[in-house]
Length: 337
Image (tube, rainbow, N blue to C red; front, side):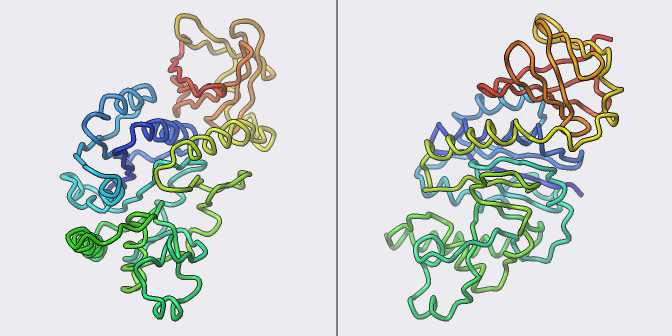
């Protein structure tokens, strides 16, 4: 069986930029295995722009178009994943919010042996963020370590989780039909409420694997730049800042260069209408003199043309995807030798 990662993009067109950055981080750092697919669930009018990003990154991934009519619906549509026509193809499912960077191999998460619960990131319990649907008396009796973010959800594809999501959707439908106040944190309080009520959550396994709003990179797999729902400006700023100052400035000396160096020395690659040449001792000829260092076996940091780039090579070093530090512009290249 295969694994599925999915994200949703609706309502706010600016969120396409968040997904673009998420997908670029997935390409550079995610190292997904061949049995992992990525699905983008989006509004029909967003499809072409998302498809352009997938093509630029050489990602042969999937798009499922749905129509939503409100900000709240755009949030809880993620709970409809079991309606996806190809859902039967997958064993494990990982949901990611748009305001996320993948900063290490996703297989570290997808290889976790799961119980039939949703795996989530623990957070300090907040009356409005998490417990909006509980009574005051219920909140007093809750385990103080029970709260969690719904921005990352990892779960098995089975009837237990399918029934949980159906129950949450029924509660949301009841809430809307009775014109009750929609929580500020949208569907998260509904997810927290039912997961706690039915003891169908694990908020401890993600410790040291997933992190909210990091300032440093310590090997985490998922970095979530959360904030007020729908506030695009704060999210894109935090994501770009982390990419610029942290992910493009990783310690290159921690990796033994010999593991990949021989694959690049004296190799020439197509770069748009020109070419770049990797030389010995970390030097390169690319629009003048340049230099390069390995971050890991297939990820190389290059400095040429007065710009910094991260190049992610495929397994035989015949092609690469480059992402430029300044503006995250993408270039695809291939070997000329």
